[in-house]
Length: 86
Image (spheres, rainbow, N blue to C red):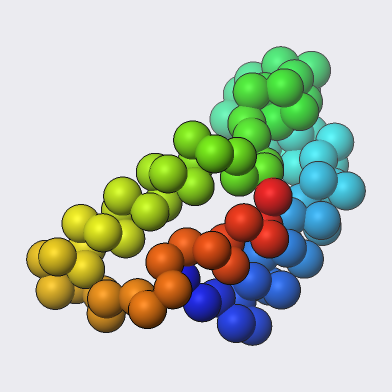
């Protein structure tokens, strides 16, 4: 899947989000009525921000199924460029 400019946008969003992790945890903890330390641990140790082999395989499968259903165009190159998001 060629992501073009979206790839740079995703990479920048990840960079900004990780840099603001403590602030995000604090504000969401207040909004949700949760302990801020719990939210920080969740964001820093549970959520995976990088795409490994399992995540890329999942994306490839979703792409395959949505293309087969006619919901997205059939890609020419597969998900090779998505690997750069790791």
